[in-house]
Image 1 (cartoon, helix red, strand yellow):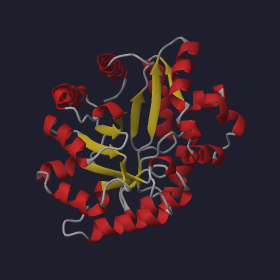
Image 2 (image 1 turned 180 degrees about the vertical axis):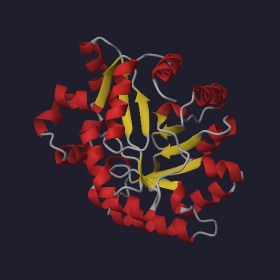
Image 3 (image 1 turned 90 degrees about the vertical axis):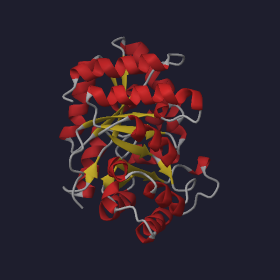
Amino acid sequence: MASLPGLGPIGIWSNKLQTDDPDDLGRLRDAAAELEELGYAALWIGGSPSLAHAAHLLAATNHITVGTSILSIWQHQAADVTRQRAALAPADRERLLLGLGVSHARFAAQYNRPYSAMRDYLTALDTAPEPVPADRRVLAAIGPKMLRLAGDRAAGAIPYLVTPEFTAQARTALGDQPFLGPEMKAVLDTDEARARTTARDYLTNYLTLPNYTNNLQRVGYTEDDITGGGSNRLVDALVACGDAEQVRTRIEEFQKAGADHVAVQIVLPPGQSYPELLRQYRELAQALPL
């Protein structure tokens, strides 16, 4: 499986790229069009999006890749996904990357044998009347078995809540050819203490989920690092804090570790607005080779 051709090195990850409120669709579409114009390579819809969420962004843009990050296999039947994808215009199908994941036991009552469930889901995508080609799907893989599956039966992996060190290990596990596009968090704030507080507040819930904490322990972090919202060592590893140049430097660390693409998630303090998120992506774009 070759890495994804034509996908640029830096995209955006945000759970604010989806809405079910018709009154918000205009604002969302305007934001998507602006982010495309700024030169970002992909819009990764965070949370648990559907193909309907992806369709809104595809309709608002012309050439940018739109990815789900991730569509939960427990919430969306493979047959429904293939039908919804087939209903898109051919050019939009080519711009869509189906990011799939098993989510977490806390969020899916039917969670059971996630590796086997993902393998069966991929088989259902392969054998549907309108199959989803392997090179148009990627897996939210962080464990060794899921990484192998991502390389064997998808275009590659889109790991979440990871470090450059994990990225190097994932590249070794995948081999040279499969796509590797980790998500990376950033806080654009040069006040170190305040930036860490913003980062830690955002990380706290993630650091209670075993899928993530087990992976962090596999790459060398301890229980002491993980508890209490994360040690400074862990917070600094998971979130790039500082100005746009410091964020760019961290992106380069991921790239040197083997990432083909980095999906940057800007993290805001509680209460800051959607326009502020766009303002910071504009600021970041000035420092990046987009």
